[in-house]
Structures are given as C-alpha cells and as structure tokens.
Image (cartoon, rainbow, N blue to C red; front, side, top):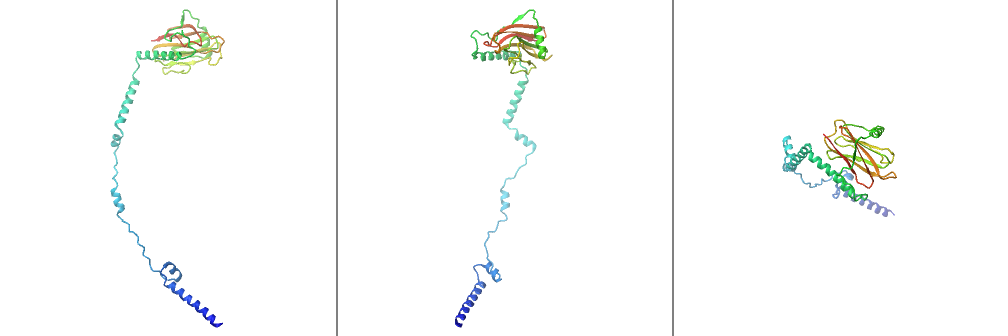
Length: 280
C-alpha cells in the first residue's frame, strides 16, 4: 500500500502549505497574525474626534463674574425693610414694658381678677344661689385680738415674717386656702406661691388632712412690699373633716399694727373676700 501512504502525506503537505499561506497573508485579524507569525500587522486607522482645546475657555467666559461684597454692603443688604419694622415694634414693646403701670391700671387688673374668680365660681356645681359676691368684704374685725394661737402655730411651722404678713388659722382637718391679690393684680396662692413683687406663700397646710390646728402664711420681706391695695381671700377647697362649716381667723400685719378678722365658710361657697388693706 505505498500509494496510499504517498497520497496521505501529500494531503498533509498541502494542508500545511495552505495554513502557512493564510497566516502570512491574514488581513482579518492583524493582532492574531502578529502573535502567531511574528510579523508586524498592518496599522488600523480609527477615526477619533479631535477635542476642541478652546471649549473650556469659552465655557469659563460664559460664566458670570462673582462679586465680593464689602462689610458695609452686607450690613445694608441684611437690614431689609421688614426687619427694620420688626426691630421698631420690639423696641416699642420694650418701651411700653418699662413704663410703670398707673394706679388706675393696677386697680383695674385687681378688680378684673376678682371678676374672673367670680365667673369661674358661677360655673361651679357647688355654688349656692345666695352666695356672697367677691367684691364684698366678709371678715369681721376683732377689737382686742388674742394672737397667741397665731404665734404658736407660725413658730411651729417655721413661718417667716416681714414688712407685710397675712396668716390664716382654723381648727379642723378641712383644706382651707389663703390667697392675697397684690397691688399689681397678681394673686399669691397655693398654685402660685411666689409673686414677681416679692410676696411668698411659705406655709400651706391640709392639702392632705394632717392637722387639726393648721396655719397658712404669706409675707413680704422688709422693704419689699409694694405700695397699693391688697385683697385677702379665703377658700374652702376640700372637706376632710366630718363638719363642713369651718370658722376661720385671719391676721393682717401691714406694719401699722396687727388686725384680726373672723368668719366662717363652707365647701359650697365661693372664695371669700375677707378684707382689704393699703400699704402706703
């Protein structure tokens, strides 16, 4: 079979020659030709757009030129007409606040507070039809008072005294409350114990039924009591004892000698205006 072998080798030789020819003349893949045949490939030209080196300069020229404002210009720009109006209104409010209130204004505010308290009580279901109005003084002044009970209870509770002092005592576990309306119209009471004019409620008893000899005390330090009219009020806030009707005693010392006022009050009655006194 020599002829078959010759034919087989002839085919292999033809295929080898053809392959070498394709490698040396390859155009479809120059990089592949270079790597296999160690022959430099034909350069392939790729068209790329050329950048405009002046585009950046043109964009920068179109941008607005920033301006630097001076300190004086900033101050003028910040002070808008609206801000100036607000500042003027604030200054006017301060000026009004600094002006002292007249005696007529103080009296009106005090009477307005009494009217407000009375209006609140009018909606209270415990109100009696024949309840005494708050503008009527109900305390009975005692001519020759015995102040020993006041002194003993105030000393026991460490109460303070001063230029003006108002104290309340009663003899059961009911919760009576003492309050004073200052000349400014501000009310000192169990829920507002320190006033802006210097008055203070420093003893408040029987919110819980703890004592059958309670005392309450409001005072102004020496030289701190404002001039004007003071109103003393008593309220039967809550019944703790078996008896509802509670006799009370109020001591007022306005630096002109102590005065005692007496009365009685029930839980069904509105706050009582016990007395009115003036500090000059």
